Amino acid sequence: MAGVVVAILWVSALLAGAPVASPDAPAGPPAAQSIPAPVFTRAPAAASICDDPAVAAAVAAGDDEAVIVAAGGGMSFREAVVSGTAPCISLSDAARRWVVVNKQRPLSPLDYEPQGIVQVQGLQTFNAGVLRQDAAAALQQMAEAVETAGVGSLGQLSGYRSYDTQVTTYQENVARGGQAEAEVSSAKPGFSEHQLGLAMDLMPCGSGCGTLDDFGTSPEGQWVAANAWQFGFIVRYEQGHTPVTGYEAEPWHLRYIGPELARAYHEGGWHTLEEFFGLPAAPSYTG
Image 1 (cartoon, rainbow, N blue to C red):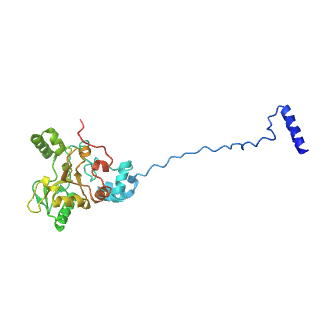
Image 2: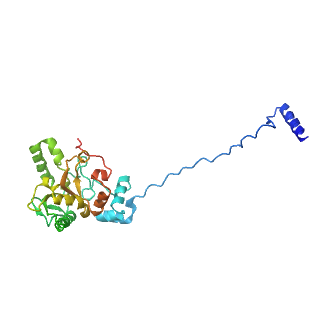
């Protein structure tokens, strides 16, 4: 009887024009519910290391190593520079250990002269064996360590070179080997790391001093390549990286960047300062 009543009601609704589902039809899907639109929020900008009072104070005091330590160490410092969260750090400041000089990045000013140049002690000297005081002290410690390790001794051929001296050096290289050869073996004036007072060319002096070309394969050179980072130095121009640095391999050319950065450079497996700081390659001069 109930079925008859339902059928009658269904027919009545149909005749009235109302949209009524058949009593035998399966139930339709439930009505869709509205879903709230997602709300996106912008992630907060990374904090600048320069906002740290300890970093700011060390920058103002000119204490490079303290700056890097306050930033969390060499790797944290590097990451801040590469990511752009270190606006108080300039890789163009010639007075800082982290300065990068190459064929695309000249010194400013071109005739820059560093402060605090001193004679390096403990090495045989064949030319201008002077460096900035911090680099000189570190090189002396490394020279002592070489002798303690029993692998020979170090000689220094060329440390700080002024702009005028680099003019002469570059011209001599051009006269000796031509322009193209000079540009992969020496820097133009105003583009040389030697002008920073942070770079030294070394020679092996175990049993009589050899030449620059002897250094890389000498016991002293091999020890330095493996251990220089412990004293804040890196081999600046390594084999196979001319497309980045613009220079042929110079295993004798040591560049001082300080203990914290040198440790990060070594542990990170870096081979050029350009790549370490995320800078473009500099195979040739601009202009």
